[in-house]
Structures are given as structure tokens and as C-alpha cells.
Image 1: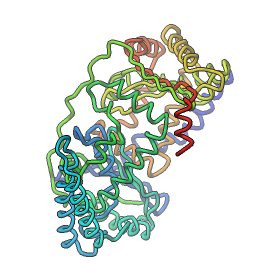
Image 2: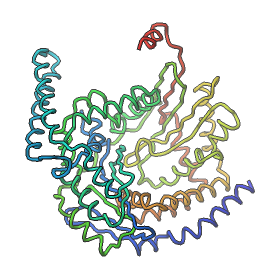
Image 3: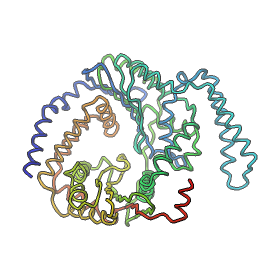
Image 4: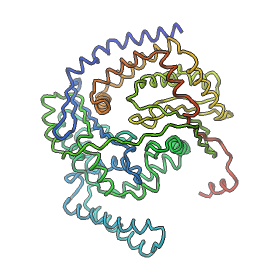
Length: 508
């Protein structure tokens, strides 16, 4: 215990110097926020250590906002955001626009016949499919593939990427400071004027992504079924990448409607961090991002997941690595105990000194890995506190389940030690400050906190919430959270393949 407390003290001392340069007062001097007349929020943070900048565009819409019957649409649109605009990625936009309209008309006719449950005409379906394929081929002649990304990369952009979670969609890369205006043009253009070229080709890519991440991955299938069991009403229970039947039929018209609803300036925050001066940068950003047409901020989701009254279970039996996962419903990030959930996560999962690792992996030697984490699959709405473990050969998920429950009961019935609580607070501070070390990390944090709290300063106030966490808080929250009626569990149990299944597998 003495060595752990000593390590905590040393870490705190080492962080002190860095923290002085990263405190709220320092950032307030270098950070400027402006809400444009169209509703878009801009954040500029001056950090002139190197002649580069990073940006982070956060659209406050993710997979949870997918329309009914069109799961995967937010993710699909993220893919389309790199396809270019009416000026980038085309040899003749006027002709291409007309061709893309014909693609949608041809697909609508084909899809209508394809969806018929009764009276489908195979010959007509084949004819409509041929017409659709011809329309796609005609539109393709105007496409300059990957031109958007190539323009950025030839101007020094690195790390071009985007991601879609249940709560948000974000876009980011880093670039030399003298290319700021080019970036502002590119980023504002794809928000204001995206062209959904090669949509159906990209839809095939997303379908393949689903097959790799879920259909062909036992753990992916298990997690998808786990969330479907844990939620009965809220979209968090729906597949984030999308259900196969819905991905395969989503249209470019639906994607355009999603863009019109959610990619409005009032629903977007753009943060820029690096070798930029607000006095020079903000006018440039206003020039480009201010031209995006305004629109009403999307209404808040009204669906609330009803209280769970009985344990739910999912069991998958197949010839693959066993696995155990369980989750407990918790409130969203605005809850007064949000920092306490972070404390429990740290106690269970932060490295080789964490409780689950020490108990299941090191001491009992029944697991190859074990950890807990909060805010799954998202935190904007009430999510789950989840715990998982992977058994070593010869051990079973049932043994892991029992061992996990003993650790949960221990948290409910015994106070954590002074050393554990101190280490959580030290690590929380270190993790936060470490996230601010890079321009990209800081841009993301500023955009996240501005979006979630309406004030990026909450990022630093989070440390105050961590400092206030007590042993009694941890016991109280554990007793509220870890109850059987609030639990959903999922298990992969090893089952030897039947002769028929083995024969089928061998023939593939």
C-alpha cells in the first residue's frame, strides 16, 4: 500500500508543472468561441508550438438518430462525406446531377418491385435491375474518384478520418497552418453541398463492413444481440452499423433527408486548435462556414427506455472462443453521479492493479482478460455500465460470472481503500491532461464539451467532480446499479460443431 501511495504522490508532483500550463485560466486566454448567425459554433484555440493545426467537426447526430427502417444511415452518410461536392469530384456537375436523379428514379422503381411480398414479377424485376445498373453506370462517367481526399492530402493534410458512434458523427484531420483557408473551403463545402455520388457502390462497402464486423464475428453478433436484449424502446438497442435488411435498401434520397435534418449549422460545432490566431482565423471561418444555410435544430429525442424489472440473458453456442458480458442500466452523462461511474470504471479496469485483472486474471487465473466500462453503447442518453471477461482454456463463462459478481458485491459492501480512491483521482487528472497534449485531442475535447454542456470550460470543471467523489458515493452507486433485475448478460459457450455443420463448413 505504501508503494502505491508513493506512486500516486510522485505522479501528482510530475503532473503539477504540466497542469499549470494547462489550467482553465490559461486556456481562456487562448480560446475564442463564436456562434454564427446561422447557428454554427466555432471554437479557435491558439497553440503556436508548431506551424500546423488540427480541426474536429462534431455533428450532434449518430446512429441513435437513424430513422425507423433505415438503421445505419448516419454511418452511411459519414462515408458519403468524402465523396465531394458540386465543385469537387465531378467533371460536369450539371450533367451528373441529372444522371443521379435518374439513378434515384430507377432505384425507386426497382426497389418497389423488389419489396413486393405478393405478386412480384421476376421478369419485370430483372428489367428494372438492368435499368438501375445502366443509370448507375451513366452517372459514374462524371465521377473523379477520391478527389476530395487527394486535394487535402496534396496540401499536407494527415490523418483524414471520420467516425460514427451512437451519439455523434465527427470529422477530423491535421494540416499546415498556411492551408487554413483551403481547409475551411473544403470542410464547409461538404457540410453545405455534399453530392451523394457512388452511393450504391458505397452501400455495398458498408454491407461488407457489417459482414466482417458482425455477421462473421462471434463477439460482434453477441454484442448486437446483447444490446437488442438490454433495450426494449430506445434506439441504443438497434444495430449501430445497421440491420442487413435495412442497409441493403437504404437510398440516397433518405440520406439527403438525413443531411437536411441533422447537418444544419445549429447542430454542429467546429473546433480548430494549433498555430492560428483568433483575430486572423475567425474572419476566415466566418466567411466559409457562415454561408451554410441555416435550419432548425433537430428536436430532442423523446423516447425514454423503461425501467428494467427482470434479468435478461442471451446465450450463443458455437465452436468459438467463449466470452462473458453483462450490463446494467445507468443514467446519462448529466447525472450528478457521472463522476462516480468513472471511479468504478477506474477501480475495475485501469491496468494491472485494477480489481478485475487482479482477481480474475492474476490471482484466480480463470480469465485472459477482464474489465468494466461505462457509457455503453453511448452516454448522451441513459446507457449501460458493462463488465466482460474472457475465460482461459478449461474455464467457463459461468465461473467468470460468479467471480465478477463477487467483485460487484465487494464494491457494494466494503469501502474502497484510501490508496484506490487517491489513485483514481490522480489517474483521472492525468488522463484528462494527456488528452489535451495533442492539437487533435484538444480539438475533440473542446467540441465534445461545448456540444454536451454548452460550454467547453466544463472540461476543466470535470476535475472538481472527480475530486468530490467519496467512498460512500461509490458504495451508494454500486448498490443502486448492480442489482439482478437491472442486469442483462450475454454468453458465448463453446459447442462442438455437429457433423452436418462441420461438413458444411469444410465445403465452403
